[in-house]
Amino acid sequence: MMRDKKKIVIIGAGPCGLGAAWRLHELGATNYEVFEKNAYAGGLSSSFVDEKGFTWDIGGHVLFSHYDYFDQVMETAIPGEGWVPHERESWIWIKNRFIPYPLQYNIGRLPEKDMVECLVGLIHCSEDNLQHANFLEWILHTFGEGIAKHFFIPYNKKVWAYPLEELSVQWTGERVAVPDVKRVIDNIMQEKDDCSWGPNNTFRFPLYGGTGAIWRSLAEKLPQEKIHFNSELIALDAEKRILKFKDGREEHYDYLITTIPIDQLILITAGISSGKKDRFVYSSSNIIGIGLKGEPPEKLRTKCWMYFPEDDNPFYRVTVFSNYSPNNVPEGRYWSLMGEVSESPQKPVDHDHLVNEAMQGFYNTCLIEKNTPVVSTWSCRAEYAYPTPFLRRDELLDRYLVDLQKNNIYSRGRFGAWKYECGNQDHALMQGVEAVDHILFGTPELTLHYPSFVNTHRVR
Image 1 (cartoon, rainbow, N blue to C red):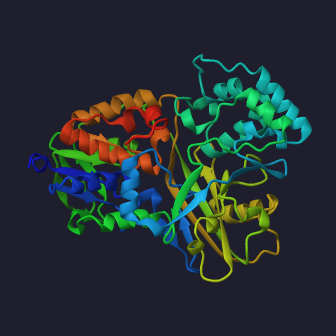
Image 2 (cartoon, rainbow, N blue to C red):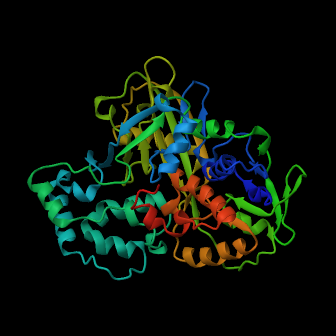
Image 3 (spheres, one colour):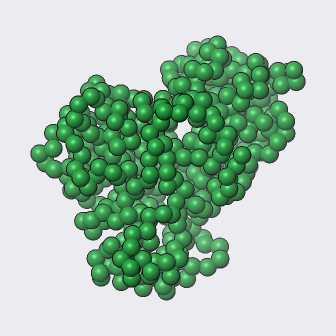
């Protein structure tokens, strides 16, 4: 078969790498191999169980989809009743109260003075179709100074961990709700909550095993001789098409699909020139989970996740993780919270005191009371968490992705392609699928090259 004349090697067994492997397996190809540096599949979508029996993800993952193909793969990984369906309840904790997300459509819940300030700023802001120089400028022009001051600026500084004037605006798309002023005023006049915006109004979560259960299951359904764990790539010769691994193994390829961060890939690749001033910007994430005895308070019993723009806590987001599945906690009366704290060279974190700071943040934001029994604490640090949409991103990507592909190297996935706007689990899997189809059949890679299209259309 023609497809077996081309040896395809895949680096990484996260959503993107498994998507590529699944597509090859589906097509009946046999001339491929998958190498994963960890002892398990899943990458950033892995899950872990702590000593007390609480399950944790590496952040508040939510599974939703823009693709029919992705949905079919998910049903194969975890059939029908293995999922818990959810309607999104996302909130913002601000001014000592919960306000439905997105804030720009629910400013009527703010204290009157702040509400008026936000509304006046929104009415008079100069949102237009002009090119904005950076993300900060776009925020001010789109939402006005009031909403920017109270939420968008402090929250985005927290989540991105870089000055907003150093970020571009190309990624925003469906990620940020551009407000309709008439709708905002109508919501205020009718004292109506407006929670309908967003790409993930509904989502589902595995009944058992956390998000990682999806990817463990998918990996187990592939031919096991094709997946090599504990295999870290340390060098790549682009001219000879030779891979070298930490354990001494060498592997030849005709085509390479790699999901390791592109900045790390460039460092270990002989035959790809790089500029001394070329720097891919990213942030890390620190996840702090607390397992609690009892039942969640009434105010949290249906909430999914919450955003925190203010500085009386270190986290930008907290998930009521026990609400996602009853099996995320041990048997008995337990519940759990999971906070996320960003980190970068411009936003350092004191790791020795971070858990204590998070605990104080949980108290300060009234998520838990001082007398709430904490029976477990868990923490994890993801070095690569957010592929920052820095100002030079597209310039560097346009050059390096093309140079790599000229050498039959396809850098794909959340950090392989470095595009936050198409870095969710569905996007990542489809980047792997579409890379395989492009290699074998020459079909276009929609997700990587046209993220605004796949984010606004249902792709079959």
